[in-house]
Amino acid sequence: MRDDGLVLPGSTIGVLGSGQLGRMFAIAARRMGYRVHTLSPDEDTPTGQVADLEINARYDDLDAVRRFASAVSVVTFEFENVPAATAAAAAECCPVRPSGQVLHTTQHRLREKTFLSEAGLPLTPYRRVDSLRSLRTAAFELGLPGILKTADFGYDGKGQFRVETEADLTAAWDGVGRRESVLEAFIPFESELSVVAARSADGNFVHYGAVENQHVNGILDIAIAPGRVPREASRRAVALARQVLEALQVVGVLCVEFFLKRDGSLSINELAPRPHNSGHFTFDANVTSQFEQQLRATCGLPLGSVTQLCPAAMANLLGDLWANGEPDWAAATALPNVKLHLYGKMAPRPGRKMGHLTALAPTVEQALADVTEARARLTRRQ
Ligand SMILES: Nc1ncnc2c1ncn2[C@@H]1O[C@H](COP(=O)(O)OP(=O)(O)O)[C@@H](O)[C@H]1O
Ligand SMILES: [Mg+2]
Image (tube, rainbow, N blue to C red; front, top):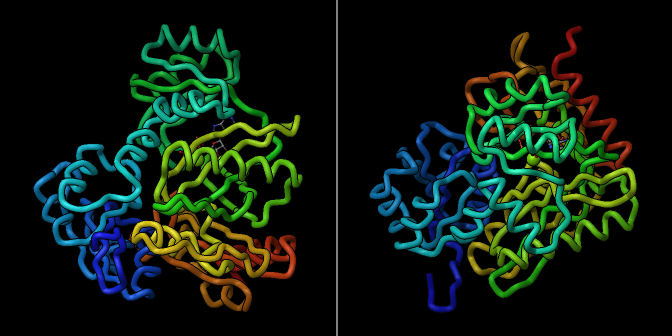
């Protein structure tokens, strides 16, 4: 890195983590002439397949992390559950963006919720739970139904247990592995929204607007952009997202997930300090994708235009689609306004994110209809 903090094209960027987010980041980085190294415990990974170098090491192998960080100009990450010690070891050797502090706050539900409530931001009522006894007290105080979530290492609805009545408490406590957790009140939301936003080292803020998200079994299924939500809710979601990025002093991309409640108010569900599944449409629909924005912020370049060129809808492709053999790619790509993204993962396990489709159309209704049709064609047998 130069004295002015710029990491210019031709330099090498290190990515901690090796999934699809790193893969799309690496594609954006390579397009702009950067080289990419990735480190994770796995081999032949989605990121590794498009990176210049794939390092296979555990995140707690701090010597390997230091060697990795010494060979690059700047380190970013695509996986927020990298241990704090890993980010700290990397930071001994080169700048890490976003900072280990952002990671530390957002990788633990309790620290994240404490940060949000101290910042005066609206969040779902919750209680910390560390025993069956404290779970009973929490259920009494919050009321049921609720959702018990592990404090750390949750994603795609994993580590979450719905508690309908007091009879479910023991099973939920066993379900989270009897470890530190959060009981949240169940929110009967009108819809779910997210705002993906970016902030540069010099404090510029940009965002991709409020996206409407539909989940199935706790996993994002469909994202619709722009979201079909009242203008005031969308304006407020963006203002809240801005507050979050500024309070955390994020340099990079961060997504804020919201519940839009029936009374029109918003609660923050959770934060993701990186590009987000609900922002994948930006790869095809926006002048600058969320991945290029992460690259620009990480490298100290000015942020790019977030202008969305046309309405879009994204549908995830989970491993379940492979249940009866290889999906019919030709049938789905026969819709010319639908873009196919596959992540290079070998084993299509149920619930595993294997890829996504993005439809671009003159209206969000048309984009939604087309992406739904394209996905249905993958498994429709003649
Ligand atoms: N308190 C809640 N009330 C209602 N639905 C919830 C609540 N918490 C989570 N969910 C549902 O489960 C999904 C996944 O939960 P989330 O906390 O975002 O976990 P993950 O880290 O797995 O994305 C949410 O997008 C939402 O659909
Ligand atoms: Mg979530």
